[in-house]
Image 1: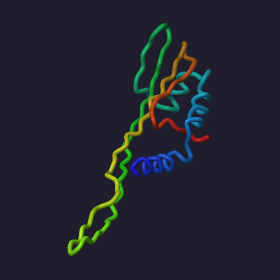
Image 2: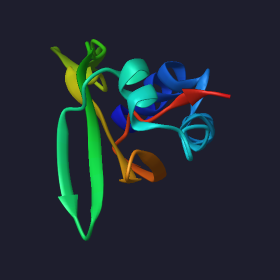
Image 3: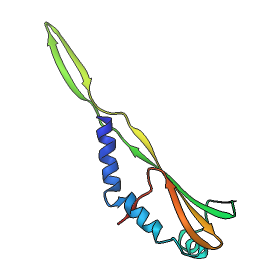
Image 4: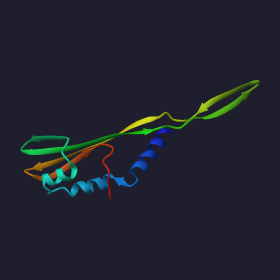
Amino acid sequence: MLRYLLLAVAVVLTSCATTAGYEKSLNSWVGAEEADLVRAWGPPDQTYEAGGRKFIAYASQRNVYLPGTPPAYQTTVLGNTVYTNPVAGTAPVDVVMSCMTTFELQGSKILSWSYKGNACKGKE
């Protein structure tokens, strides 16, 4: 039951946004100038250099609270005794949504990008 609830919430949260939409947006930055990216995205969260290339990374994270569902109750009568037991229901869940996007630059030009996380979505 919890899996279905999480799936339903994920569908609702991402119904208008997809990884394909995010990748399309990232592709539009290939060949662009670093200064233009920083103007649009703000200062990067991390920068580093390796192999003569510069890498700049942007990170985002948020928590989504899923309140859970109350149980239903089933009552059974055995002789003169009545038993009432909770059935189903789900516990509340706190889901961490994150995305880390890294751009690779040579000089001031963006060469490529990569991302990881469950919240890397964009509109198509």
